[in-house]
Length: 260
Image (cartoon, rainbow, N blue to C red; front, side, top):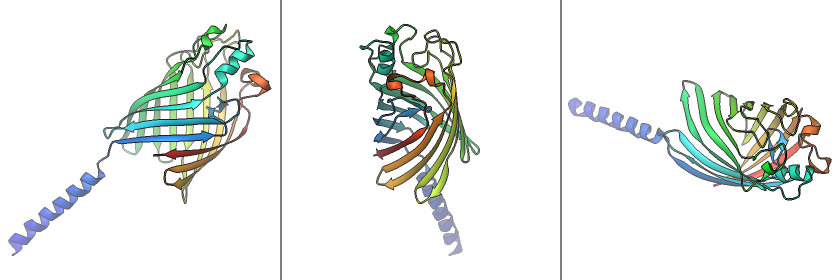
């Protein structure tokens, strides 16, 4: 009986381990999201004239670690730039981000490398003297260890319509704190360096540091909410467009998102 029992137990154990290993294998996922925010802030600067914006996206993550996605938002800064320059026919009401990359890990350190294209559909910002087309290409790399993430983004084209701004960069440091009961707290600091000369303004006046503290809440069933304190030390005259609104001012941004 022992000769029969031992192989049986070994076979059962191997089968159980195989089942666990199979269950632990990563799966490919496809997800969608839609949302609204009281103000679309990107790197601390309002893209929507301190007003609400509609947003949505789609993401595909392959079990191999590769991923691609697209995300969009309504914006106002391109039209506002034209208005400030005295041109009423400058347009570009939508931002569409197209991205792809690879995520993996080495020991306890996770990494993420990829490419991001900011497509401002139909924009004609380049018609203004001192500006070029707003479409922008960046490459990025991020490292995560425990709660902390450092991410570096590097422009391989002109940055957001600024003349001769290739090789501009953004460094982002953040932490993700799980407060329990579906709450998370995310402190953030970022440094945007803008190269080149825009509209006769010398290099450096468009560079700045931004800060944010975001409280998130998972409401269940794919619904989540957020509230963020955001501010920057941006030069006011560099980021003030129409109605004397300073797009880098401190403020509270709230959002609601549904993922499915």
